[in-house]
Length: 322
Image 1 (cartoon, rainbow, N blue to C red):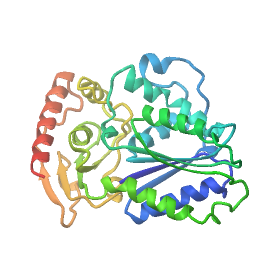
Image 2: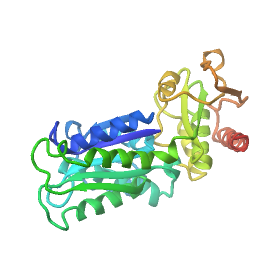
Image 3: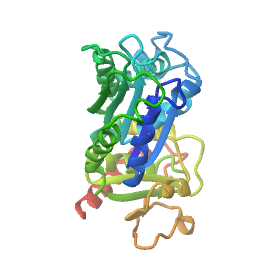
Image 4: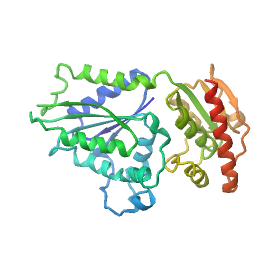
């Protein structure tokens, strides 16, 4: 289970940060891999309405959103967003990040591409406000609703607290810690008993990436999927991205990772290797399969399609054995 936090408060030790820390501590206790983006400390530029994303599905602005945060959003099973209320919405820094996710909205709705992780991804909001106004959090709920839809996450839950202004107010709140722990347990329940499968190849640029995507699309409710390479390259193969797009599956934001990095996220129950040979890891207790699948790197789109279809069939067969 992978949990991403988007911490929107500029106060490093503020009430929003307290909520985020409590959420992540409980998620880690349940075995999750966690990442937190301190939004106010990152290089995030606002949307400039170039409209490139509407036409081509990517944002031309080069900052931390493009280089890292899009990928983290796709990495996550659960996305938790925290913010104080600023004029009936989230902070400006967090709103800038949200606005930049128009590129993900465009990939989903304009280009009709499916994020492989969309089957299970959940989103939630933790927010605090200083006043007691009845409608204090309405703007945040609307923003969260449309943000989570854009990033292919179901807006599953929220916790909002009125009358929170001074440092330490949330730490003194009589139910906050229990509220957050209960939320994490509820959100995590569907993820905790999935079979962990690692797909491994040499570069993590074609075969293992396609296998992981098909596994998520076909059986993301039963499989927790990881991919890695024994000698990962800088970027996924563009022909692989094109071949998978023909199936309606969006791989453009995927990035190769090393096997060690993939294994650090969790002990796999199944390891499927595709050509990395003796450099692939031996994990005690894990079922091991070797798929004799041709490496399509450097070959034609026609070959890539053939390998794609072969891998899809093999993933279906693997799922049938579970």
